[in-house]
Amino acid sequence: IASDGLKGRVFEVSLADLQNDEVAFRKFKLVTEDVQGKNCLTNFHGMDLTRDKMCSMVKKWQ
Image (cartoon, rainbow, N blue to C red):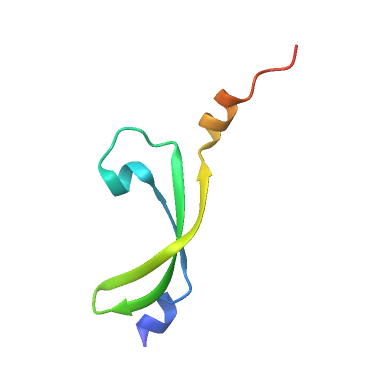
């Protein structure tokens, strides 16, 4: 069954995609726990920042 292939899969989505926002430097990892019809029930798996945001936060050594 196709739903078994989705369980345990990790998705990485931008916070801007989830909230229709302009600020897109936070990325969330969600893991699929269950599949109900066309809906995937997910759980928080981790958070990351985009590379450009990380680079802007780190000050260059002089």
